[in-house]
Amino acid sequence: VTWAGDEAGSCELLADGGTIESLTGAGDIDWQPEQGGVMTLTLKTRDSSGVTLAEYSRTFDVVPRNVTLSDEDLPLDDFYPGLCHWVTNLTIASQAVMDAFIATDFHNIQSVIISKNVTNIPSNAFKDCSSLVSVSISHSVTNIGQEAYFGCSNLGYVIIGVGVESVGENAFGCDDSTEHVPMTVHAPEGLEL
Image (tube, rainbow, N blue to C red):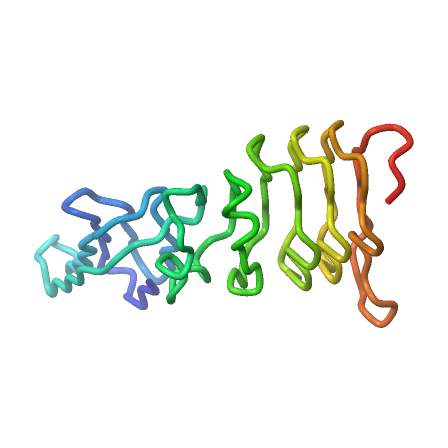
């Protein structure tokens, strides 16, 4: 929400009746709930004496930025339509979800946690997720597939659990023409990346 008011007026953003943020003068309100569901947002504008000038309300489905995908979310097609672009922090909580996952639908994903219920990260699983910054891979994972994180040009921090026995070719690579950030990797001793 962008509020382009003058210094004499104010703006208040409410979610389901509770105030999220108030502004005086011009500015932006950047807000996203931690939990999803149906929510009504109301924007109230007031003059300098506090009299409400206008009130706008809208009800819509909300997707949180932090999402854990588990077997209960399968099939993932039910989750995907129009919702994935909001998610920035993702936890994959089962092997079935990992096998069905299509990372290219998550354009703004920045952080991924692969949980203890996952044993294999398939080839190309997160390929070309350029907004991805950090990955934490559980000790239960034994295999990271070929090019699983290839082309993740902003991936700068990776933790690999001690259970990983094999890493596919170019699992964390980038093509030479792509500029990428330096990567810090914490991995079991002797594991070849």
